[in-house]
Length: 379
Ligand code: ADP
Ligand code: MG
Image 1 (tube, rainbow, N blue to C red):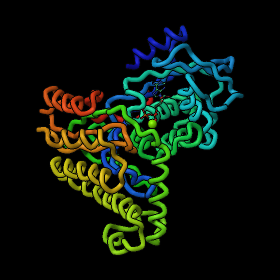
Image 2: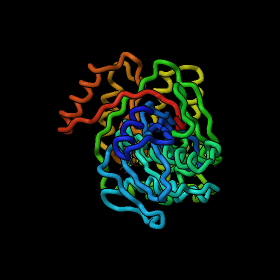
Image 3: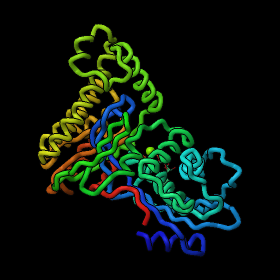
Image 4: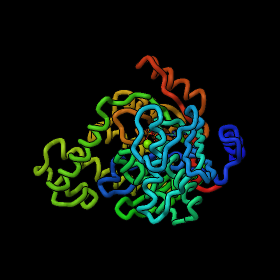
């Protein structure tokens, strides 16, 4: 891939890149909406991602190109306004440049930039974190800085939160930054603390992207955030991570029926992350699969961030052979379901699931088979 992006870079800019960096996409394995509640989450870095190649320019000009977009876009160094429309993808690397000084690194002045990807964008696999982290590693290297991985992760998150304007938690960048092949990334979002845990062999991931998205998804996300904070307050804690299922049930009278369901989902989900970690350590993929499906049912009935399409996929997948478990992955209100399967799950099963979905909804989901991969790195 390094030689492929160098070739493409040469094609666009007529010279070779000086620095190439890579960062993977990720799946939210389990831990749904736990991040902003101070909880824990498990994620998997994928074997797909975004490559960024750059070379410095003495004239101070900044040019951005992507293999998924048209001609290079020039952005003047003094014009750091957020882009709209067709060139808005540039906000991801621009956001990284804007974030660097706050982390003690001087943003490089002039360069040619090229992004290349084998990760579907907008599919809930966090291509945004991948392009941010690959950009951050490349720009930091050009600036002569090699900060700890956690800083690279924070620069990416800062770009997404403050420049792009998406209030994502630490999961996306943390997993892209700390991922390892055949391991999952465990994050305690309060630190944040990052650890990795082995993923038993024979775990395969299949992503079923419905391409459906609730029209009000941003508002619904914010509403869930508010509901969780209000529930914490009613329960007398700062964040829901500080309480547990027994206390939530004991104090149910203090909560509205909605707030009770939201709080119960979060405390149960945090417990499921811990149980998943134990089951992974025992190599018990069947138990992990049951926890994944239980997580989905909790989203479906308690957190109410699922959709008919996602529920249908989980129903069909969990009734299909070779499937350990399935759940919506990411924020919900549309998007994708991930299934963890054994190696025998394949084309025949995929065709049956797709046919059932098509018969019900009239369209087919995109299906992607992926495995774990390594985290962000300079190449
Ligand atoms: P996700 O992170 O789930 O893929 P987002 O909407 O958060 O979805 O991020 C997708 C956006 O990231 C794209 O619309 C585009 O602006 C940007 N992006 C991702 N990968 C690339 C790429 N290879 N080239 C250009 N832009 C990209
Ligand atoms: Mg994203």
